[in-house]
Image (cartoon, rainbow, N blue to C red):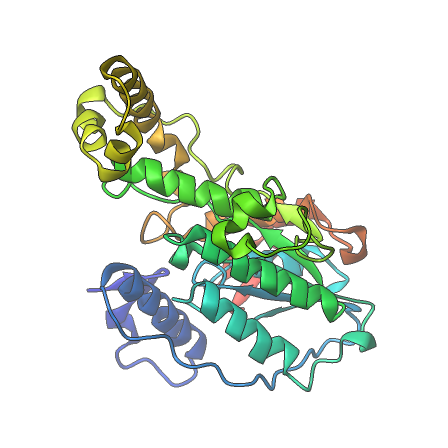
Length: 342
């Protein structure tokens, strides 16, 4: 029997046609599981030009969520929590699973910029709440360049940007030894760019060549940055990996060997011990188990609640947020959404 997002496949068999919310939630969640566990060369579905529109006239500030599978989580995601907690905003979630830097930019352009039903000037403010890039984390400078382009094009159209860092992710299997050291560096490069901690040269690498300005141009960084990685999601007090567990996988990893090449025997020994010591701390980069959904990347509803609380503390006053509401929200199957218990 398959269970996903709290829905059992066997319970869906023979369900009545009115139970659309449960079926949709199960289907979306199952697609995330398959995308996370089954390798495939099939590219994402090509984007079409958006035709959606904002609907709530009593919500003068509009927020568009864009990201990949974390943001597209169907049941109690951070966008839904923020929508409930902030009385002046209307949130439109345009996230899509299984897309990385290039596809995120294409989706931004076609779903937002080319959508003729979106009139930026008709609203008090329009914000892009953006989190993405993990699906192309292996090319962090390229990912940063796509993010930079999204931020810049949004600002040029009068859209303010709330940039969310990637969340804590990884597992003991994938982040073991030298491989984990590389993942940590890739993730930090993307997150540090979102937080405005890097120069263009450091953040963009070869994509910074030919720039006339040594610093960032107006609009290339988010209006507001939110550090999801160092939120309460991260298990910063996790036990260290044992020396035996990481040493071999660190010592013989190609990235480590490259870094040790050309050093004297004493320098290699010292540098290797530094890497082994760092590798032992990698478990402290992971998401806490109680906040994980079906894997070590996607937060469950409790994890999304933590994300929403972190975002809420950085939200502008124009959103009209009451962050105390977030902790009291609960998912109601009957209501098909988040509700405040009596």
